[in-house]
Image 1 (cartoon, rainbow, N blue to C red):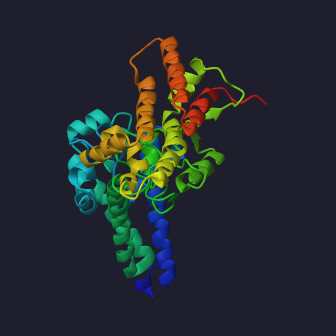
Image 2 (image 1 turned 90 degrees about the vertical axis):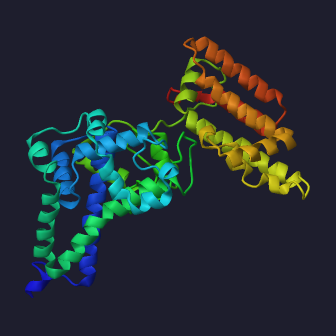
Image 3 (image 1 turned 90 degrees about the horizontal axis):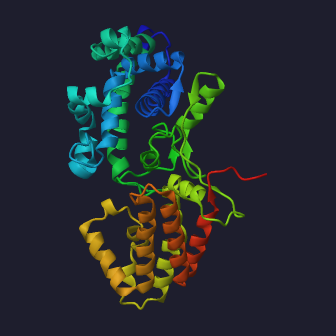
Length: 393
């Protein structure tokens, strides 16, 4: 019948087509806008660039420059008053409810000029995509009506809501509010789920904020980034090139000398080093000390492993009081907390002489081993194994 459109689909087929269209939009956002345009982790060929630009114009009305500029500003001003959509500053409710409005409000001329460099400025962008965003989505409404008949209105409405809800709301909101953290980077970003499928891999938001220019968002063996899967398919087809991925720590157990190579490898992998410290030193010692504590002091160890390893800028006043209470009552945990801060100081020193930094790292290792704390001693012993060189065959 005419009101079923040219494809004359049943209900489940309509659902499938709606999910397919919204998924293509998500892939366009994560591969083109995010990993390519905003962070340059990829180099896309002209076929993909033009397809993604057209598809995004039709399904979202967005132009490349606006999205890119706002996202770069988010990274530059993250969790501050100038962050366009931080739930830490604005509240989770506002970001979830008004994600699209916050996006539009952030598109000031100053932001576009400062953060939108390197985005397309061709005839299509200047004459079609940027000034006529609403035209694009109205064209797609006509396409949906032709393909799906009256049901096309529903298909189109879902498409229009998909990015505002899942990208502007869920990622920008929940991705800085709830979830787990692999790395203690200097913002509140979280991984919403270890399986990044529905939102193209963007669910792995803490991994992304730790390594923003990486074109691969998964980090652990159990994490899955469907966007990375598509990137590899496009690469096999010769449609793009992968430029950057997160550094992967290289270790060589036969290497026992602390030198500038060790220093460089530890600096490059400092987030992984701190994650290893949290897992192999802090967590087991908190469990050990909690097991040995009397009943009156056991509540002191609640969430201790988490707050003792937290990025300093994210520690709340309440957490700071909790930390101080732990340090005042437990010498072992005080030692490992102080040693963690001292280790960070090694690579944060404003010193240009590598020999001084190597000396500082050696001193840290010697002091850590002298504490007599076995897990700390074992961790310190692994630092000499870090290297920038591939392991010899």
